Length: 250
Image (cartoon, rainbow, N blue to C red):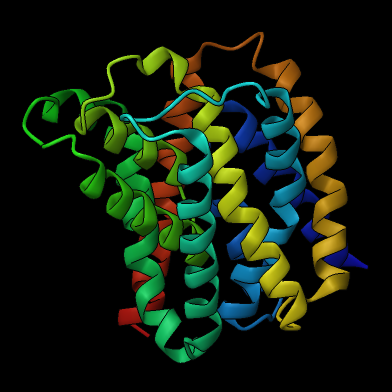
């Protein structure tokens, strides 16, 4: 019973973080690993547990279908789905022993994206070529990352689109949410069909996540965005350091 209460709380915390600033997998993934799941199963289960919140957000943006860097939303969706499928297969083919070594670096990448993602795109604007080929290739790579791990992939997408010439940053929340949800959805289906999801733990976390999403929507109206962001970065940096120590210091 204690383990499931722990997972319930982790699901609540993960959805709360996603609602406020992002980085929800920094709560759910460590909790599943601490509960005894191998890291690959834990990552797959974490993706499934957080999926309903992302899907609900995507539904609210279902009209956000404008082209990205000159590519219509339809092709961008296909590219992202293909990348997400490839990334989810890549995760399933990765031994947990290897994923344990890779995971701290993925957490570090996600933490850096949370910290600097909003600045990277504008800083690189006009320095990268906005032709459709590079845009499609980078979007496929982001889809692969989304299916494989996915931490802060939404911020990475916005940063990449901005660097590739997309000027209307304020209108990108809809496309970002839709495409992140697409990568997650294909990953969830792949993980479920492959039997990589530990359902008792995942469903417990999912219930907590539903409550956390509601709480996050309410709390987000009352606390400054900078406070939520600083608290999130402090947590993600701490988790990243713990996983580096776990992987490399034994």
